[in-house]
Length: 180
Ligand SMILES: CC(C)(COP(=O)(O)OP(=O)(O)OC[C@H]1O[C@@H](n2cnc3c(N)ncnc32)[C@H](O)[C@@H]1OP(=O)(O)O)[C@@H](O)C(=O)NCCC(=O)NCCS
Image (cartoon, rainbow, N blue to C red; front, side, top):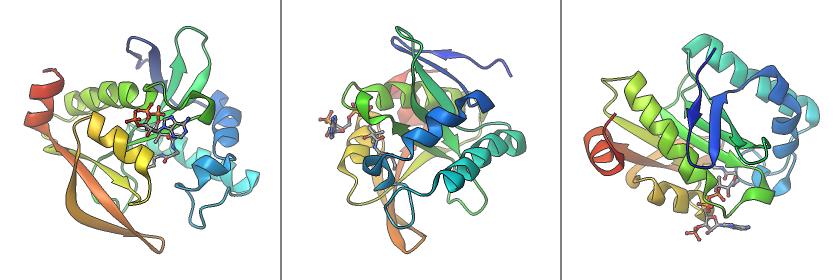
């Protein structure tokens, strides 16, 4: 698969098997697990491997999925950002997670904007993009605001949590962040 998306500082490409260790290590960090697992604690390495396999499987089944994000200056793997819509999801989501050592550099919004532009181009009839965010996750809410999403008022019940659905409407988003 030869999808490559470049931004000023980042390269986005479909997740591949070689990203397994970096991804599994990232999700072992309690600071990330606090917002990404059912009990808010890191899962076992075995379970994190299975989860990684589901991300590769998402590409196989849907033809799209999370991008691995690389820092162009160093080639370092810094996280995963991109479209995600497993069975039962309330819409086509743009998700994001960045290795903690790289938080605060604006990498998640930079990658998300490029990823959403790619997603709207790939799906010309897609009316909106969503992000599903824990009401306590201030960092993720900050990203959502930077990329033009607003809290829609809809709630997605997942595990035992009530998660907010943030959303950006296609036409308004393209008017703000650039036509395809
Ligand atoms: C949410 C996340 C992807 C943001 O990535 P990022 O590349 O750091 O994004 P930004 O640089 O735009 O920072 C976003 C906010 O995080 C906060 N932040 C930045 N650096 C931080 C740090 N070192 N420690 C704690 N918070 C920090 C700031 O509030 C910032 O908002 P601001 O720029 O308005 O001050 C990242 O925090 C993360 O991976 N969190 C855990 C996983 C997660 O929650 N994923 C999303 C699930 S919905």
